[in-house]
Image 1: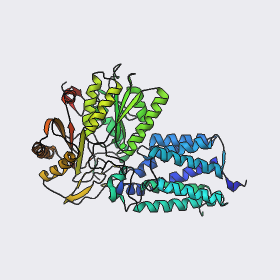
Image 2: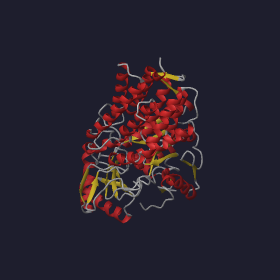
Image 3: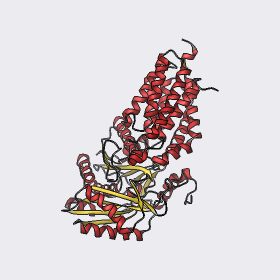
Image 4: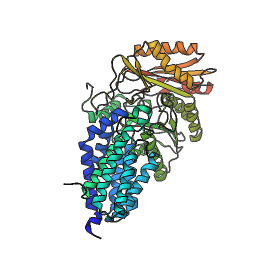
Length: 215
Length: 332
């Protein structure tokens, strides 16, 4: 196994740090998207949550400890629907990864899949409902397909980022069936989904941490 | 944005400080943002815990006290409280007889209360039952939406079930009563203006001077239709008709609430109540009790909502029972 085929705790901490920066830098944009079809708080909620995560992130010894802290911090600081959804995502990643210090591609994939399953269980959304799932599912599909074709983690994470963006863009035409946007019915079409948009930052951050973005 | 605030990020903490100053009979946990009654839940009494995003005052913190809630969790503006907050309120309010969670049907609120109930039962063994209020006829209750929203009926439900809890009824019968109240009430709201969330700093939606939004929620979510501004009599009709079309309110006493969204003066709310009362009389609906004022608001939004609840002798007796909270007070 080459170095490029594994991800260390430091890289996972870097992932979270990059996610925080993207969320904080774009919080006004996320809130604007949420004003159109939701309740105008997604950016400020996610920024508050990731800032709280950053304060709690010492260098953990194992991957499960890292993500337990992240998940519980988000659950207890974000509120709204994003708190339980992102919180459950990271909690499941941690329990699936277990008390290890390094993940290979298949272990990272399994952990991310478990996170996705947690989001589905908590939110009861299906693909096409105009939610974060519409960016997350294609991202993980692309990540797995890329690894299966022999790509390294850098390229696989870049493919996931690209697929997440396409998934986010596709939410523009969708009619929301979950969350507050669903109250609008047809009027929810024509707007990007805020949750799918913050999910793109999650995969942009992962690609950055795994060397999948041009520096 | 012109608001009576120090800083957008300090609104909730500063408001809780004000509630504590104004109501020494309540106990405010500032760290966890929970409002409790000043005295612990009496042994054997089921505790009622509610909560939700802030910005709807007096709901929910203003309904803590004898005859209504035992504790209320305040989330950020329009954002559900978090599971650890709700779990703490549940733990502290429980007297051993169990806790009823009163949850408004919003995706975030339902998820956070669900997680809190899971955590509370697993970690502290508190018995928790939940009722999810979903009375807003503006939203189609189908598998294609998150379901009808919880709005004005929440106020009436907290009052009636709160009175029943004071009588010493057990958790299961209170949950059953709450479910029955929820099935017997409907609401519909409208907005003349948007609200402005402090953190956003500008109105959540644009609404031209000559237009109004019918079927609006309590978070500045746009409504079902945007229509030209009309006289109060016509607005009343547009609120009452969909409620009466959804549920039969004839043949028994009804409790009616004309609620202000926060930015409409009381004179307009009374004017609207007059129009609503005329329409109800014409439709053969007997209003036995009414409530007019700002009870479940949407920050500074101008507008109102109508809530009707089918009542019977039992619910009227519970409605008339003494209540002593910052937001509702009679019989004491």
